[in-house]
Length: 424
Image (cartoon, rainbow, N blue to C red; front, side):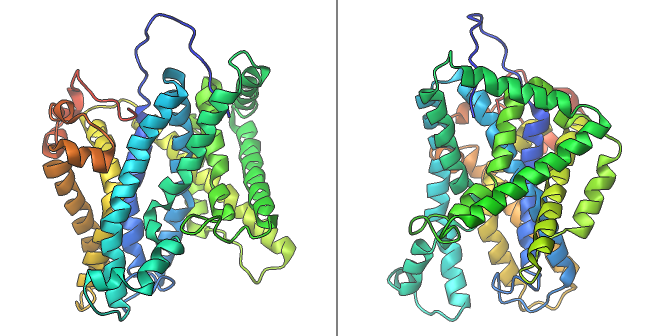
């Protein structure tokens, strides 16, 4: 994993990848539906005390799980390289500390703890929050790593960011490793250009992921936590290939072009992958299990690349709506989980059609986060720093808010000249 260094002393206008950033933003909003689905999924009975469940929600959440998080890691690797091309490693780490670590710590200590307290009460615990903090259940939340909840994605990203910065420091700028990494990325892009080569590229990516999973499973204790409260080696490395391909795509415009090139058959392939959702089963034989693991990884890459191609084709222009979505995306990701639990629990005693309850949990959770973002995060510097890792309140106030961005077609055509960089 390396980055390229811009030797041109003339400042260049920063390129905005509206398609990739738009994909990340929309998927963060889609995470609300994913977690709302767990309220009604039979295989996730612990999410609330709700007894109204339907198998279709298992299908929904497992299908969404196939591509949402892997796409996040691809985007994380992609933008890590872009940041390192214009920042020193120290500046890069400070930026990632602000944008990743501070929101992670803030939500972990507040909304995640509130959700765990509510879960404790729903599971039979009684007492105040102070009683819970003094209980063995509170210790287990932190020691067992469950404090992370949906934040595990950010926890996994932090070591990858540290690795990216370390490579930037350790590998000399004139090293052959740097030029070789760009060459390999570029050649891979050339090899998968076109329809048939792209099919073989998909198979290769599926095989690479399968090898990564298989090798991680062979590490002794790979399913155990590396350290109390952290993650297992298996979970930490499972998404790493997506981060690496994101890095390679940033290094090579040729590879990025090959990955996001629209192919007419990809929507059909993506629909098949989402519908059939191949997963390995613990009772499978070794060969069957490996075949299913490969099919699973192939389905994941098919969906991830379809998402990137879809947004590149249809959402590549930017505008006020894209800017607003990018700005609100992190707030949506961070806050929604607790509200899904709260609203999901509110509907436990309600005997409404399950589809209606699901829709309401999703909309109420998303709407509450949007209100928080509009009324607090965008207006107060401390709140924006803690929840978004940014200090640009004065600048963001000049940007269209939710209603202004979505009120009329004119908002799409007229982009503000002071548009914020969603990657800053």
